[in-house]
Amino acid sequence: MKTAAGTPKPTRGQRSAIRRGQPLLLAADDPSRTPIALDAMGADKSPLPEILGAILAVRTLPVRVLLVGPQDTLRPALAAQLHGEDLPIEIVHASEWISMDDKAAASVRTKRDSSMRVGLKLVREGRASGFVTAGNTGAAMATAKMVLGALQGVERPALATAFPTQTGSPCLLLDVGANVDSSPEILRQFAVMGAMYSHSVLGISEPRVGLLSIGEEDTKGNAITLQTFPLIKQSGLNFIGNVEGRDLFNGHADVVVCDGFVGNVALKTAEGVARLTSALLKESLMSTLVSKVGALLSKRAFNNFKKHLDYREHGGVPLLGVRGVCIIGHGSSNDRAIMNGIRVAAEFARADINSAIEHKLAALAAEPVPEPAPAQ
Image 1 (cartoon, rainbow, N blue to C red):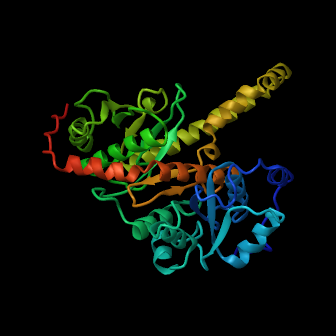
Image 2: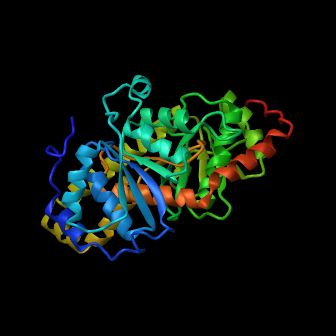
Image 3: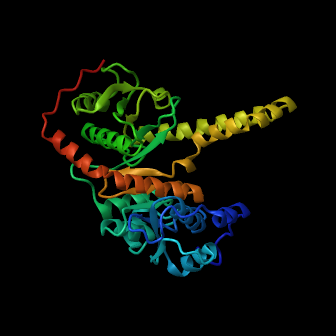
């Protein structure tokens, strides 16, 4: 059980960052601040990363934070970090929380006053513009579906994650785990949601949408991709056809669509390769005195390299297709990752993507279904 007494103490660097924090971007009571609900009990070391991340966020972003969790734990822990400073952070009481070890389906049903459910209710009721959690992914998805419901025309929500590319522009992959199996129509819905998010949040004017397959030819793929190809082609999106795994990183596509099984395998493979690359690079640079000197001289470049691969810079992944904004972060999120999750949630909310998704899907639903290409 997590209590205020058991909350880990911040490091010297964290204390320094909080005390040295930049001047407030806006006055604490400025009504233009976007309200974001934050699950204070989600991360592995909660609630400290959430509290420090919330403080960083309200100092540097036009947001106010509703910190959701047990008030007897959060109130003294927050006061210990504020040092009397008046910041736009409000505690919203939730008597329960869902741990990483809890079974998603069971915990969603039994823990009716969990920090996830209370936070998502704030979004549903209009008290918060978005919700951020670094907690149990399965529970977060199930709770969001139950509390917020799906957008009109969306059969299943999808998790989307942005990959770094050679060109510097991110490539959005969805679904990365919300749905193991998806029909062609659901994959077309993913394409629409991904394109809208890429345009409005990632800032890509006309996102190039690709369908992940085993070859670029129209006739390559399995039964699902062959049936999906003409649906996306007729959608009016900037569809570039089938793409392969390498296109996630070379900048050829801005949005790549697949089912959650394939997407999750691709994501975990990419994470493994990134760790291997970093480990091998570090080992090589530390192998000789000359290479150590070279590493020291190239420190800035290597830091930039690590930043591109660092999940903390991206904050979390959006659950697209629900009636609201839900950002799910990594369980090991630190204060910076939490701050970036809040930033992403606020950007998502201000972009009003969901209404555009519903409008586009309604238009597509009225069109005839095209015939799939024959398999090769």
